[in-house]
Length: 202
Ligand SMILES: [Zn+2]
Image (cartoon, rainbow, N blue to C red):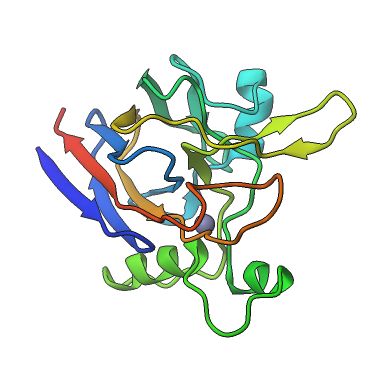
């Protein structure tokens, strides 16, 4: 069993061989975790929520769902979820310019940069930031198409467990989104906390 603590506002990569399970936990609750997965043998094949939406016919990952790559190959299966399905597959990873868009001045940690740094530590450079699965992120699509992010209800210790269906390199980012936007509370306000990754071998 491999356990990695992803410090608040940072990202970490972990190898998840085919058949192994990865569990992602939000120890304090209400902390969003951006989740990315790549084919360990070809980083140009990544987990793709938009391709998955029209395979599972859902914009949320559910127990039993198989999440696929942009080449439409099975990558991960959702095994357990005690976060009551409170995950998002719609929102792009936050980046410097998203924070600037909302008026932030100066550098700001982001999931996009966390992903790039986590992979650089292993000697990989990527030039595309894939659409993540935003674990523990509360979004809702209204009948008129509006996208809402109501207050995050995820309890401390909530987790999701996924089985790798191919050899994967996964990256998890503790989302540093700490802006106070009315009606768009991604995390627990400005309180950004750590995320725990565990990998159980096959
Ligand atoms: Zn983020």
